[in-house]
Length: 232
Image (cartoon, rainbow, N blue to C red):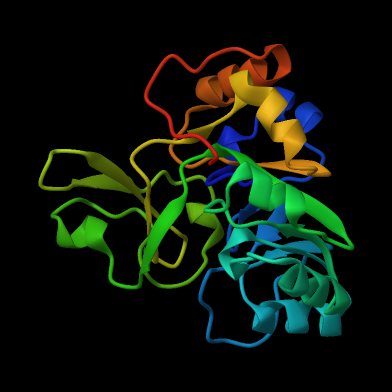
């Protein structure tokens, strides 16, 4: 599971998830690398979540365990096989695939599908939070430990009034997330049809209490109760 902030990782979450990632620059779990990074060298971590083939190459060269995220846009078996050959220990399929398409993709290493969370839609280097007149707690100048738990977030609305959350990484890079989360706790029969070895969760603006509620939904097969989107 991916978390935005350490404070979201509850005791229940640590028991429920076998792998937990935090954004690069925040401490308390394995590392999800920045979606776009220009510097060399990797953070100290035994395991990293990579978003590009370049990051996968660097992780393999550094001797780190690496998991390939959905940002690598895996749409077929050939791509999945190549990523596994490059050193990925798991591959998360594109959430744009339908359930039958996910089922038909063969993955030599661990096959993952996203079963919960708001999908990241856009990465911005310019801080929309501070541009919008709000006090950005990230500072925009590196990865100071004091920002480990800072909750720097805002939102934007489209012309229909639909709200999209914005969260800032420790270096002030902004991530815009979808307005509604993927949710499949009450559709487990569909998840089993994908042939996935593991399920992947993305937590963005959820509170610790909401994190525990989502875990309970997946443990008991409960409905969300709000607006959600489904796997195809």
